[in-house]
Image (cartoon, rainbow, N blue to C red; front, top):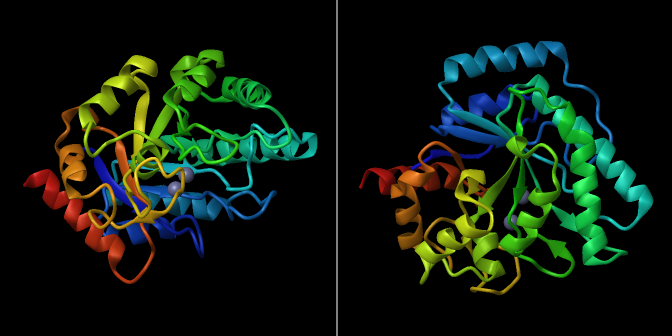
Length: 279
Ligand SMILES: [Zn+2]
Ligand SMILES: [Zn+2]
C-alpha cells in the first residue's frame, strides 16, 4: 500500500519536480529543496513557490517530502561542522515549511571525532533547538534507518528510539524506514518480515513510521554496505515488496524509490510496485 513515488529533480526550479512526477505517474515524490552539495543556498524565488503550488494542486500528488543535504551531520564531534549542519538543517526545515511539505527526511548522523554517546546527544540537542519552531501543520522530521556502517548512527531501532526519547516535541518526530538500509543493517525482511515490523513496533512504535524508502539491496543481508538496486533485482527480492505493497498498516504513507537513475527505470519500478499492490 502507500503512495508510490520516486526522488524527483528540482533542476530548473522546484516546480519542475511536479512535472516529472506527472510524467512518471507517481503518487508521491521526494525532493531536495536546494542543491544538496552546498552548505548555504539562496531562498527559493517567490515565483517558483507560486508555480509549485499551482502545479501541485492540479497534480493530484498525495504526498511530497524533502531529503536533507548529504553534507549535514547533526552528530558530528567537530564544532564547526556541527554548527554548519544545524544552520543548514534549519534552512532545510524553513524551505520545507514554505513549500508546505509533509516531512523532512534526514540521516541521523555519524559520530566522527567523538563517541557514540556524544553523537546521540548532539543529534537530540540539534533537534530540540529546531523542532520547537515548526508550526503545528508543518512538516514531520523523519529519522532515516541506516545500514549502520562505521560510525553511522541509525542501524539499530534502539538508536532511533533513544533519539526520539530525548526529543521534546514527540508529535513532530518520526522515522523513514529504508528497506535496503534496514536489511543491510541486519534486519531480515526476507525470512522474518513480520518480526522486523513487530520489533520496530516494540522498540519505536509503528505509529512513528511515516515514510518509506523502497529500495532493493545490491549487497547481502547484514553487509552494513549501502548499495541500492532495482525492485526485485537485488538480495531482498520481489516477495518482500509484494508484502509491503499489500500491507494495510502502510496504506497512507509515501513510499519512495531511490533506485539507480538509468533510462526509464523509475517508470518501470513504479509500474511494478503498482502491479504488486493491485495483484
Ligand atoms: Zn537518505
Ligand atoms: Zn541508501
